[in-house]
Length: 346
Ligand code: NAD
Ligand code: ZN
Image 1 (cartoon, helix red, strand yellow):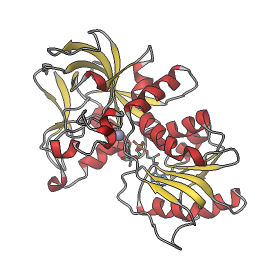
Image 2 (spheres, protein in one colour; image 1 turned 45 degrees about the horizontal axis):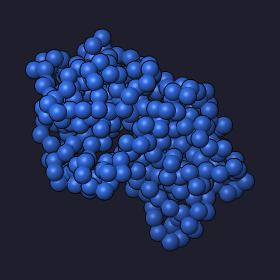
Image 3 (cartoon, protein in one colour; image 1 turned 180 degrees about the vertical axis):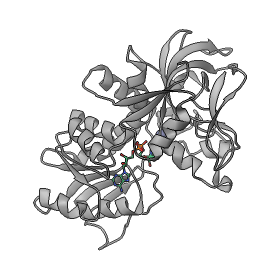
């Protein structure tokens, strides 16, 4: 099969030929119909070799939908031909967190060498993806594969983040979304669908600000040092009740804390490498901060159910496997509108 691999630290990913994988006991072979590109892939490819927790080469891609192509011995729960979305935050499967579907917070995965596909295990930017267990598949329920694939991370991570912030997203509240990319443009729509909060979006690109307004933000502001004041002006001086930082740099961490209201819930979702202040008199009274990772199995089922109910407008740009390196370049340059999706069979 053909696959896009990150082969050497610091080098651009390349398309290579690999043997078709064969499912072992309990495993499922999925023929990938669509795979999404995430900014986390760029963060991974920017790590120095000594910080990688797995050997190279690595087949990239951690957002996947596809068709069940073959089952390993003893695998039950799915059938050949089923259309499925892949839950990628694989855990050990046996601990209390995994039993509750919170595999994204499995405390054993790292020690046991269990990696997510595309983030250590062979990923979805290939014709076939080996899924370690049927519990990591959710029926696609007739959704369009291209529009649905961003749900498995951009949608799932945003949904999981919003669920934590929900107690603060009451009528009259304000939510700030920093970074209107793959995740941010879905988060705005989930906020609209699930909460009555007023939404203020921040980005550094005028095109992304227009996208934010098109998908449901009430206001969209340029992201810079003046943003906290802009947000206070819009909220009668109170600030934001919830801040989602989908960038995670020093600059956006500062905006987050400076625009937060008393008792705000703030979330650092982005992997920008920045730090956010925490300490008495450094942040508003009663502020709580959360660094969420991906989402739970239940969250994925729910976000797919929400998409099935209609009303989500997931923006995508599609690419062939050969064009995937170019798509990553566009993502790095901030040029992708919504999510870049690769069709490995296309
Ligand atoms: P993306 O590249 O699609 O979007 C990033 C957006 O941020 C772009 O629109 C860009 O213009 C904007 N931006 C850049 N600098 C900014 C600034 N200073 N202020 C405001 N906006 C700015 O990325 P994505 O795939 O949506 O991912 C977003 C972040 O979330 C990445 O850091 C990614 O690694 C991370 N992520 C985290 C998790 C998790 O589980 N915590 C899961 C998925 C992605
Ligand atoms: Zn991701």
